[in-house]
Length: 257
Image (tube, rainbow, N blue to C red; front, side, top):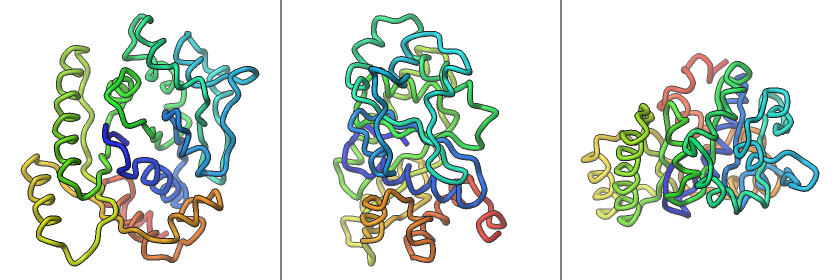
């Protein structure tokens, strides 16, 4: 999940899309790359302790082997695993600038798990920093959560520009943008919302999901559950299933199985 703007529900989208994929039988790893750790706590899990546990920051700053890297992973529920955040992630960006191949450090850790999971989804912090660059370089594809806001459009343009510049400089393939996930959407559309849609369309990016505000989403975080676990028959759970299909992560058959 990529977007430099904060407050656009990146964590919520990561959590519930991941839970939707897991409920459909996919093996899913969620990676909390945000020092705030909201994905970790939202799933009812504890942050890793840098003093006596291997953290993602530590793994990215050294050459971590497969068996050691697996110590990062905690299982949340059936088909769903997490690499939790840790407090030392606040120092990650600063330390990365002093390492070789600084944009590839996350890639070197996560490539250990390519054969273990059907999907690996990373929740990024809202910043244009070297840790976000690591996600851009690693990711084969991406979803961009955003809210219905003209400032979000400007942030999106800036982010797409960063991606183009970074991948050119590092000679890597830019991620395939599966589309935009609009959060806190209210229907019927206002004139303002329609204008946001038109601005997105002008960037040649499809809107693959519309997620409205729902009490069940907030309640599920307090229970440490995904919406697929907490309220699988709710309309918002259906919207996340629709998002999984429209973004090409699930087929209609997998959703209905």
